[in-house]
Each structure stands twice: as structure tokens, then as C-alpha cells.
Image 1 (tube, protein in one colour):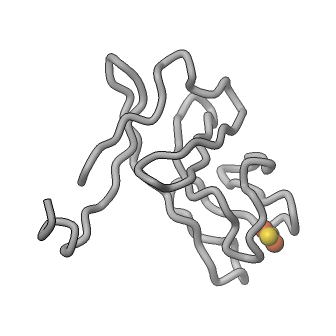
Image 2 (image 1 turned 30 degrees about the vertical axis):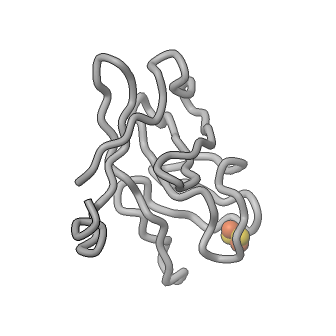
Length: 111
Ligand code: FES
């Protein structure tokens, strides 16, 4: 796991809001849901809607386009959707929020 600083503490989105940022070349949504900070991919796998315009309901992120729902802990789509979103681990440190990315076998070869 490789950790990248995503935000300073003052930049962390307020309760019940979503912010789009770029970390390690990936666009992510940073979500403050019930005082837990969650990082997800920014686009919806259904038809590419931008999840930053969505909202949280019953532990799910709802896409604003066709209202598909994704579990905020596992990324799994609701029953019948058959899809998922990537959820990235987050860590709040003294100097801000960090997001972790799995390292692929080929990236280890080049580092
Ligand atoms: S684009 Fe997100 S539900 Fe269709």
C-alpha cells in the first residue's frame, strides 16, 4: 500500500458533503459521511455520471444521474445492479488526510 497526501485538515469536506480531488493521477470523491472520511472513484460505473453530485443515504452513495446506489464501505452496487465502485482506504494524520493505493506488481518493478 502506498499512501498519498490528499488534503490538509482544513480542506476536508464538511459533514454530509462530497469534494472532488485528484490524487496520484486519479480523480476521487472525498466524502464526509457521519464523520467518517471515505474516498471513492469519481465516476459512476453505470454510465459515467459524476458521483460528486450525488448524496449519501442509508450507508450508500447515490449517483445523481440514474440513482444507482453504492455501499460506502464495500463499494458494491445495490441488489440487481451487478456493479461496484472502488473505495480507497483513508487515514487522518497530523498534517492531513492520506489516501492509500494498492501497489501493482509492475509498479514495484520500476520503483
Ligand atoms: S450514471 Fe450513475 S446511475 Fe447511471
